[in-house]
Structures are given as C-alpha cells and as structure tokens.
Length: 426
Image 1 (tube, rainbow, N blue to C red):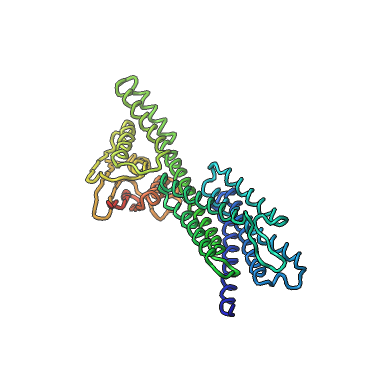
Image 2: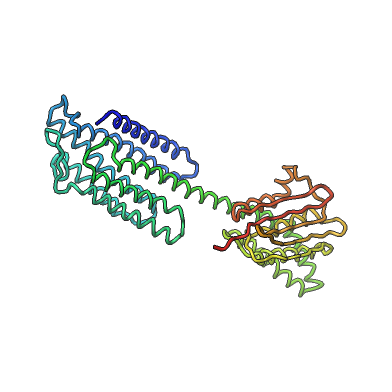
C-alpha cells in the first residue's frame, strides 16, 4: 500500500474519530434531547468508537502484523476475539437505531436476535461455528459465519419499513433522515462485500459514523419541534389567562345580575354569549392549527357585545374587505381587549376600528383606536399591560410566518397591524 493511500486512510480515520467525539459532546450538551434518548445516543457513540478501534485491529490481523512476535495459538485467539467484537456490536448499533426510531414499538424480537447473534460469535472464540483465525493468520468462516450479515440486513429492512410507515402516517419530512441513513449503511455493506482488499477503514464503518450523525440531527429536529409545540401551548395558556381577567368576570356577572331584575330575556342572552366566550377561550388551548378569520371575528364580536353592556358608549366598527384566510386562534380578540382596557375606556367618543384588506403578498388586519396610546419604546409597558400584543406577535410569527406592527404614541391612539403571508396554491 503506497504512502499516499496510507496517509489518506489515516486522515479519514482521524476525521471519523473527531466527528464521533464532537457528536458525543453535542449529544451530551443538547438541551432538546430527552434523557432516555440521550443515554442511548451516548451508548451508540461509545460502541461505534469501539468499532473503529476494532477495524484497526482487524487490519493489523489481515496484514499479519498482530502475529509478529506472538505465540501463533494465542495470536489466533486474540484475532478471533477482536473480530467477534465487531460482529457482535454492529447489529446492536442498528438495533439501537430501531429503538430510537420507534421507542414505543414491539421490537422484542430485535433484542432477541441481537442476543442470539452475540452468542453465536462469542462461542466462535472457543469453537469455530461462525468465524476463526488459524495460526498463520488466515480467516475462516464457519457454517454460521453470515449470521451477523443476515441479522443486520433484517434490522435495516425493518428500520426502513418503520421510517416509511411513520412518514406515510404523519407526513413528517424528517423521517427521510433515518431512511437515508439505513440505505447508506446497506449500500456500504454491499460495497465492502465486493472489495478484494481489506482496508483499515471500511465503507461500512464510515456509513455507520454518518448514520450516527444523521440520527443525532434527526433527534434534535424531532425534540426541537416538540419543544416549539410546547412553547406554543404555553403561549395559548398565557393568552387565555390574560383574557379571562377577574375584573371582566366580576363586571360581566354584575351586569347579568342587574339585567335579571330589569330585562330577564337580555340577561338570559348575556349568559348564553358569556358561556360561548368562555368555551371558545378554553377551546383555543387545544387549537394547534390556524382557524378561519370568520371564527376569530365571531369570538371577537361575542367579547365586544359583553363589554358594551358595561361600556355602551364605545363604538366598534368592522370593515371586513378580506376574509378568506386563516390565522392563529385568539389573535384579534386580545388586541381589541387591549384597546378597550388600556386605550378608549373612559375617554370622550371612544372608537375602535377593525379592518381587513389584502394585497398581492399578504393579508392585513388592522385594529385601530383613538385612545390614550402609549410609548412603544417602553419595554416594561409592552411586556406588562400589553402582554397581549407580545403573545399575539409570537403566535403569528411561529404559526404562519407573519408579523405584527405596532404604531402608537401617548394621546394619539394605537394601531396594531397583523401581516399574514398569502398562501400560495400549489
């Protein structure tokens, strides 16, 4: 083997080791991956590092370097044990990939076959039923010599089927990653079987390292998405809690009580719409998808109808010029409530205008009032009394890629504009 090829193999070997070490640290430090999956990935990293070392030892055996200066019988036993290590570990690594892909699946047969495979090759150290080395360093394959290959291909096939099923069922594009990793490992195994010369680093070894990296990236994407979903759920809870304020409940109940004496039919109607308001707020907690504008406007109208019982002087004006689009639940109503609570309540001729329009690129929803206004550069005010704006901005950005603009100054009212990109038909 010429010096250039040797140098290339050394560089490749070092690169694989460094990649594994770097990934091990990344798995350890990643805040998104859960404890159980993190433990499995760390074990996989250690096993693959052992496989890399085992590959180097196999190369020394193949070049008869291990037998130099050793008792031939002892050298043959050591060579067999080193090779057995690789045959035992490879299916275990793939079995762990199966677990990471489908942790809740019934994969007991995977673990049973891994154990049988390990037993077959461990026995070979003492009795050559699968593999052995003679005293001259020549490799021999016994009647069960292809057990590792058969088991590994079964695991890889099952892994691909699991990934395809998950992709078909959930339409998760990230499931392409385990499918690709499994296909690369199968291809590398076939290439190694066709090779006529042994190399210190096999195609299979490189493919397994790449598979580890791919699985880490896949797990990171999976748990990062779950974390984002959890944040959105927390955001929905914050929005709901910011809407159902004690003073609003007390005022509404007091209004209903007063109406019971002087206008019972209106009291009954108010109870009905108040119940609808509470139900829709609670329903929004489980709303992970966008909803039609019409549904959001209906909820807003219910809220304003209740508020107008207590503050009938407020003018609510709707100018709906665009309504065929979707948006996150509890988007308009919290902003209208902000306008009433912090803007127009108590001023002369209070007015709130809710307008929708569209241009070629986006749908726009504008909530404008002639109230007190506020300083938009005052962070404490934005995060305190105007937490509704922050919550709406977060949901619009994450759920539909839009944005929320706020224009206001003390004494000059407030205008909040929601921009939602036009959905392109494909």
